[in-house]
Structures are given as C-alpha cells and as structure tokens.
Amino acid sequence: MAKQALVTTGATVTFSKLIEFSLATEYVAELMDLGYTDYVVQYGKSEGAKQLVVGLLEKIKRKFELGSNRELQEEENGQLNLTVIHESNKLHIRCIRYDKDIASKYTAESNLVISHAGTGSILDSVRLGKKLIVLINDSLKDNHQLEIAQAFEELNVLKVAKGNLKEFVQLTKKMENCQFEKLAQPKGWILEEVLHSIWNQGQDNHRLSK
Image (tube, rainbow, N blue to C red; front, side, top):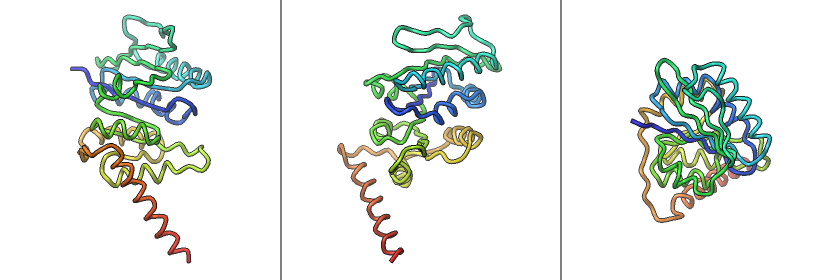
C-alpha cells in the first residue's frame, strides 16, 4: 500500500535547514523503515535551493541501493526523481520547485506533512486532517512563526520540531502514534483563535514586564 510524506518549504525564501533535514540520509532511511513508499520534497524556486537538493540527492545515491533507473532524473519543469532501496524497502523521491495546487495534488494525498511555519501551509494541512510537523525558520527577521506554530500546537493539530536532526528523526517516528484534533470549523476560525492566543500571551508578557 502506498504511503506518502510531503515536505513543503514555501516558494520564495530558501529554507535550507528544512531541505537539509528532510534529505539527510538518516531521515530518508527512517522514512523507509516506517513504510513510506513515496516522498515529495517541495524545495522552492531559487537556483540555490535546487543546487542544495541536487547535492543532497547525490549523497543519498551514494548511501543506498538504487532502483532500476540508477541515475538522478530531471524533468523539464525542474522536478528531480530518484528511487532508493533500503533493507528491501523502496522509496520514490520527487523533488519539485513549486506548485500552486500543492494542497490538492500533494497534501491531500500524503499521510505526513513536514512544513515551514507559513500560516497558509499550516492551514492547508490542518483542514485536510493531515499529521503535521512544523519546523521554524529561525533565519527570518521579525519572525512570529514560532508563536503561531506553538499556538497551533496548543490546539493539538500539529507538532513543532525543536532541536537537531536526531530529534527531528525521532519526532517523525513518534508521529506514527500521535492523535490530533480534527478541526472542521468555518474558514478563518482556526487562524482567529491562534491570533487571539498570541495576543493574550503578549498581553500577559507586557503585564509581567511592568
């Protein structure tokens, strides 16, 4: 039975840490151990992101046995394809630049989503009832992603990844048994509750600082 994981990094800013974690050989091996057969990594539009992905896929090629097509394949739209085998488990890896219909084409078909902390990406996964790991991009200035992601985590609709690659791998393993709330609320309700939670936290911090 097919089992798919999706990584989404956003279209503009290259989220190198998420790309590096998601295409680390240890992480790819863990996905195969967990029974994943398909892996889609959306890496962004920049040439730098593509070069990073190509380099990581080359490391994966050297680490694992390869499928029948032993070379990294690139399609006209920039999609990179590679099939690897680990202890009789086979994983089809597709790395895509960006697709405006990513929610309907990929998120809807995935068992697990690993995402940047953009509100749109989070809401897409939450509304589709997907298991979701969010990694914060600490390099962004004036970044409220951590507060937003933690507020969603308090609603029990996702897990926020913290720490290093080893902890990222362990969290992915734990996700197999995690149970999340199914929020079928009118459009905008979830975001309003999250923003309200962040505002309340800010008010509490302001009172404590006085």
